[in-house]
Amino acid sequence: MSESRSTPELAAILKDPGFCRHSTPHTAVVDWDADTGWSQPRIEPRSDLTMNPATLGLHYGQAVFEGLKAFRAEDGSVRLFRPEDHGVRLARSAARLAMAEMPPELFVRACAELVAADAAWVPGGYGQSLYLRPLLIATEADLGLRPSRRYRCVILAYPADPCFGADFRPLSVTTATETVRAVRGGTGESKCAGNYAAGLLTRTEAQAAGYDEVLWLDGLERSRIEELSTMNLFLVWRDAEGSRLTTPPCDGTIVRGLTRDSLLTLARDRGIAAAEEHTTIDAVRDGLRSGRLAEVFACGTAGVVVPVGRLGIGAEDLTVGDGGEGPMTTALRGGLLDVQHGRASDAHGWLWPVPRADENGERRA
Ligand code: COI
Image (tube, rainbow, N blue to C red):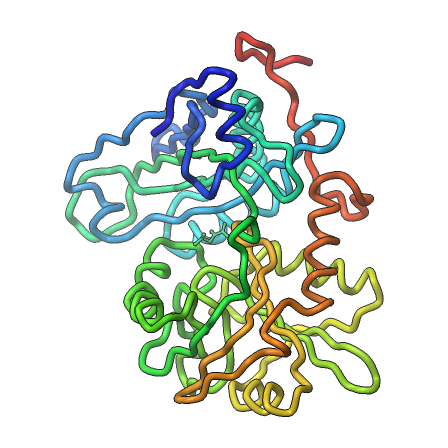
């Protein structure tokens, strides 16, 4: 539920927000119509969407989304992390589904206005953030199979803990053998609702068997690792020469994770060898058995950076390292959070200041 909160209530929520348990009181809404184009963003009290049951987005799946975060720095200022890159990715996702592409500049403005309106909801703890969930959905009612002539972008906001909070533990992951999430030429890299639905059955079965997540293999040969249902994946190889970081390339079947991209950049800034390359599940198995594959971690906007402690491959359950978190995983997560909270220099211009709104909700200069 979202509603206005008293100061003590809000303080209690921000102290222990969990993930998406409490929404802020507002949403940002931007509409597109084939005749008039994009509207200006409107900041509105959060309310339910009312839809005709024949809405195209519900029947034929024209629905894409983003996840991005605003962070509070120690001086109290609030900054969005890579909002333009998220806007570019939303537009790419939309284009793949023949949907209207929102200009990234408009997307950034809508996000910034929402964060400014609900700035009191941005928590200040290390790793905490205001998580924004922009959804773009076809809103025209018609059962003919064609692109909608109307879309709505609605941006939701939630104070969020890092998922490595009090109950944090390394993930147990199992490899999907019977089902696939994406194939080349499909919608795998698009953040469309259908991709997440396609993985749900396998993920639910994996969770019933005691795993947290599913590792997807490529859809054709089912030999190369791709990503998890909710996060990209990194491997840390270690030998006498040192450590080397690898992650599957963005070939159209995995989400172009911005946390993934940020970690690759931060690793290279630190002189760590980091490559985007294909790895077979057989090489992962061999690496875990020999100890050369020393760390595995998952990353995403919501999850940040989470170690994988156990990996199921076929009938075999392999422990990664000692089953805990390895030093590269810890260092890269800390490096990213330090930038996000303004503790380390923002060498790549990832942080966008959010102008403050005054108490009447109006923008200050
Ligand atoms: C995010 O990390 O922001 C995502 O969109 C993944 C989601 C399934 C939690």
